[in-house]
Length: 75
Image (cartoon, rainbow, N blue to C red; front, side):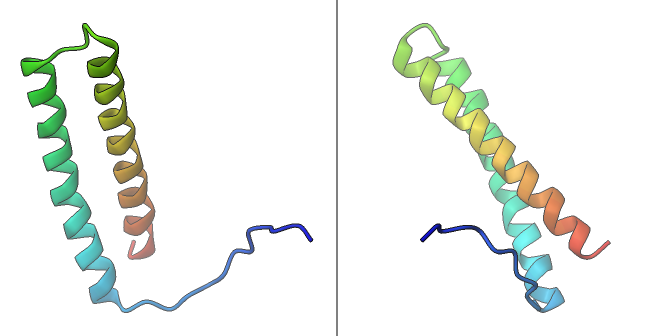
């Protein structure tokens, strides 16, 4: 048996979409601040610090993609 992703169409209240967008916007700003703080305080000179900065950058990309997709829901 192959487990395959099956897209589904769900109905979600508009207020829930707006709340999620607001929460992700706030999280995005905090994550960007965390990256700046990391760069200032630790930089990327060690493997650990470089990997941590790269993880924060990946988190930013994921949040931005989620925001883009949610904003399309109410456009």
